[in-house]
Each structure stands twice: as C-alpha cells, then as structure tokens.
Image 1 (cartoon, rainbow, N blue to C red):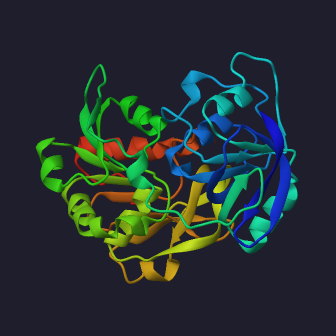
Image 2: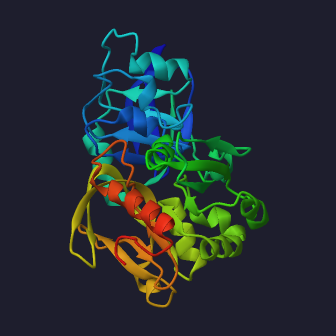
Length: 351
C-alpha cells in the first residue's frame, strides 16, 4: 500500500514523502551513514524503537539474506530513505518491511533531514500519513532482552562466557563462539547469585537500546559482577559499567551511527576504523574522578571510546568490535578478552 505521508519531528519540522505500508511509527529519529549493511542495522536490537534515516540515497539494492540478520526480527520502528530499490528479488527489502508491518517513508529529501538533525540534534518523531504530536519513549531494554537463559555451545569449549543481554547482537555471540567460548545469554536483570551458579569464566555486558539511566537500579549489582569476573562491556554495557565505577553519562547532540568512525588506542596510538551505534557517551571530565582510565578516544570529536580498570580485568568499549556492518579490524578486542580469561591475567588492549 502506497500513499502520501510525512515524518514530523518534535520541533515541528515536517518532511513529506511516499508512505509504504499501512501502519505509523514513533521513535527517536536517527541517521546511519554507512553505504551498506541496512539489514544488520534494521535487525540490531540497539535500534529498537528508533526511526532510522539512511543517508545513502539508494537502499535495498542487493536484497536481504537470512544469515545477515542480527536478531530474529526487525527492531526499528520505521525507515526513512530517499530511494527504496524494487529489485524484483525473492529477498526484496521492501516486501520484507511491509510484511513485518514496518512503515517506510520514501522519496524524502534525506540530505535536508540529516542536515537538520546534525544542527538541531536527534529527537523524537512520528512517521504517519498525516502530522501528529509526539511523545517520549519508555524503557526499551526489557523489550529486547531474552526472557530466559539461552546457551550457545561450541564443538570445543575452552571457556564459558555469560552475556548480560541488554539487546545483544548475534555477531557478538558468534565472535566468542569462533574463539571456542560457550556463551550463555541471560536476562538483563539476572542477579549475581544466579550468574555465580552458572560458573562463568568471564562476563560480556552487551549493547542495547536507549538511555542507560533505565537501569540505574541495577548499577550496584553491575559493579559487583564486574569486580567478580573478567569483564568486557560493549556500547550500552560500556556505559553501564562506566556508571557503576563513578562516571557520568550524557546525551550526545547527535549520535554516532555508521561504519567508518576512527578510534585511537591511547597507549599505542593505533587507530581502528569502527562501527558505532549510540546516542549517549561517557562524560570525559567524570572519568578523572572515577575508578577507571581512558583506553580509547574518538579521533573526530575526542569522545570517550573505551575504559580500562587499572587493577581488575575490566575493559569497556563504546564502539562495536564485532562490526556487522563495518570493518573487522577491532575484532582484536575479542581476541584479547578471551586470551585474558584463558591466561587468567589482564591482557586487554590498552593495558
């Protein structure tokens, strides 16, 4: 079903287009700068509840494939593009979005829209066949986290990682399995007593959607867990661990969402090109008064991209080392995490 529609932002700006699908959507309107990887983005739980604007002018040109999804379903609330390809393939993106009841606004001046978001900041919007008022969103992590433990075995188990699931991507689990680690994914609010019974060799605090303040009530438990086991925090996990050890988190004017963000490792000066998806960052001034040290920084804006505990095997990264989409050079983070566990010593990047 096609018809006229529009994206209405919280500040009143309206961007018209052609609406594909019969439903409407509300969510934080954010933009992704990668040229490819649209399927991974659409199924990444970190995008839960958001309306994603693709900056590349043609989306859907190579169809979709089952193995590229990062979760079992499309996670975004809506999609905004300049041109949506209609390639006639069985794996057509437009058909998949419509069948999943995800509204798509096409024929939009996405350059003007992204320019506005860069100037005015990410904000809530509504995608519909008419204009409407918008409202703030509620807790999103509970909607994407597993409801019960799930075990991902390997042929040879060198160790066991428990993943606290704030919206974990499939490729994170696969990265650990490729390194011969069994992974048990548990609900985001699983208490330490239950995790202790699983006897993990290390913990992964995963990525996830929304504001980390959603989980302020769990911060004391998160600190206990991080101190008890070798720990890796990614994206949302990075922010939660940072809060647990005394850092403050602030909202970015407009988030980092793309596959070409340069990050510098402070100790060595090595630069990684990274995949990123976040709208909150660790406040730089707060790190000096915390228990953590800065390990990585964003080259473009100097924002905190990774933290390291000086005496405990705890590393956090704001970027996505598993990529998907994006370059794979930061996969070394998983190598060092697993090496540190197997050797029972701190072997993290930046140490």
